[in-house]
Structures are given as structure tokens and as C-alpha cells.
Image (cartoon, rainbow, N blue to C red):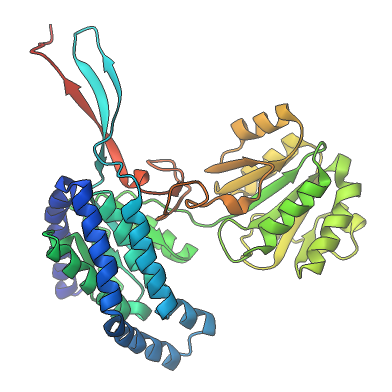
Length: 420
């Protein structure tokens, strides 16, 4: 491993730890002024940012990257306006830091409560989209943290240009610019070194494909918040309103098929299969969806093709849907337990007891009744903004907003008590 890479990353982590103490001490007003200054400076320096972005785009075209990848890399006027709006929105969100809750007086006379505090230093490791640089920084800073950012090599010029603006804005408002750091080397060794800085970094959040997330989870000495994939199911129960069920299934699969909260597998109760499967398969086919079904599905809908074993538990991220007829609620929950990814699961039912069983017993970060899986999103849940979705249970489960970028410490108020 290059000693230069190791030294660079270690020094960044040390400086970020020092800067995190200053961020934790900032008032809500100071943090909001920092974010609004960042928004203003992104607008002022848009042409400089786009000049650096053009270098990444030129390199991407030379490498033959896909049109979709180049689109994700492009910092157009619209994308920069979106980043500016995002900073302004985060500035307007309530600040969770310092909130004290659950104050209880103990028999000794001491009063014990919990206070929300920043995590400290958050490392983000992500791919492609350079706008993540600004979005992640905004959320981490509002929650009183320092942030270390390691984007993909394909966006290095864009990420460094964006970070330079954010750091200047921090400094202009009296903050420590090292509260925002972008790893400036593209060598993958930098990621490995970053993941070893457990003395200086409190949490790692990887965003990207399953390969990246597994690499981070396997090599990190630091707690990692992750979700490998989103294999989301909808179960249509025997009592379901079939019109509602069809509308929800179509939305969950087709509204935006390439995202982690899109529907990947439909489970249908055997009692309503003959009524529901033909109509929903026909509707899905009209919407351009390839339906891969079990033997019972094939017997009810000739437009479906046979599913293979690998289709159960597959994240298609495309207009492809697996469909299985199941005996009952227990069989549906057994399928979900085996093939789900703890992301989002939904039941369509008019049976209150079944709905409550599904809510209690299905292990996922979001469990829904009579709603599309596409609602599994921080913005839709009222978090204001989202840094990612966690399918691990410590310390966050599901979409992560500002509150999930903090933790809680115990605070104790006394009047001279001593323990006997």
C-alpha cells in the first residue's frame, strides 16, 4: 500500500475528528447560515464547477461509459439548482441536536434523561452522482457532524470542485473547513485506509451497487449502515380489494422500476388467484412488464413466462416481476422471510387481524398495509431529506434523515446526591 495514500487519508480523518467538535458546538442558527452560504456560493461558482465537471464527462466518454452513466455524472443547471434547493430545504428542517427527552426522577432524587447529540465523523463512500457530495454534506453538517466523502473516480474533478465551495462557505461563516473532506486520490487503497480509521470515524455509509456495499462491510473496522439490495414484495390477501391491489401493484412496479423500493415479487392468495392473476398479469404486460410466474400463475395467465429458482429473491431493477400463488398469509410470510431483503414489504387486505399479524411478524425496515412500496422514502415519510436506507438494525432501520445522523446520550441532573 502506498505510504502517501495512507498518510493522506489518516491526516484527513484526524482533521475531521478535530473539526467535528466545532460542528457539535455550533448553534442551529450558525449551521443554517453555513448551509445557506453554501447554497449561495454554489450558484455564484456554477461555471467553475461545470468546468471541472466537463473534465469528468470528457473522461467518461473516452472510456465509453453508457449514456445513463454520463447523465448521472452531468452537473447541469437543473442539477445544480436542485442541490441549491436541497441545501435550503435542509436549513429549514428542525434541528434534532440538543433535544432532551424522557426526563424521569429516580428514587435517589436524580433526574435522568436522554439528549440527542451528533455521531461525530461520518464517512460516505458512494458511486457516480456528484450531487451526493452536497446532499450528504448538508445532512451531516445540520446534524452537527463532520463528513468525509469518497466518491467514484469517474466524478473526482466534480466532487473536489463541489467540496472546495462547501469548505469555503464553512470558513466564511467561522467554521472549520475540515468538517467537509473529499478524498482526493482515486486509488482504491484509499477506501481500505478510510475503513481502518476507527479512532477517528464513527460511522460509514456506503451508497451504490451491492458489490461496493459488500466490499465496505467486509473491510471496515467501523460500524457500517447498509442495505445490499431491495427485494420488495406485495402480498394480495384473500380479502383484498382487487381494484386497489391492481392499482398498487402497477404503481409499485412501473412508476420507477430501477430503484430499491420498486416491487420485485408479487404474492397472491390462492383463494383470489383465479380472479386476480389474469387481470393483473394483463395489466402488467400492457405496461411493458415481463411477468415470470410459478406453475399456478402460468395456468391462469398465458402471457406469463416460467420463473426460475433464481427469480425468487432477485432484485431486477427493471420491468420484470416475479409472481407466485401462495396458500395463505403464513405461506406469504414464509416466502418473504426466505427471499426478502428487510427493505419494504406490503400487504393488500381488508382483514384487520391479518394486517396486524403482517405488521408484527414481517421483518423489514418498512412494513405497509394497502400502500405501494414506492412510499418507502425519507421524503415521503416526512423526514425532509434522506441520506440512505438502512436494512441493518443498529442504530437505524429504514430511511435515514437528520435524526438518524445523531445518537442519544444519558444526561443526569442532581442536587448533591451521592450513592449509598
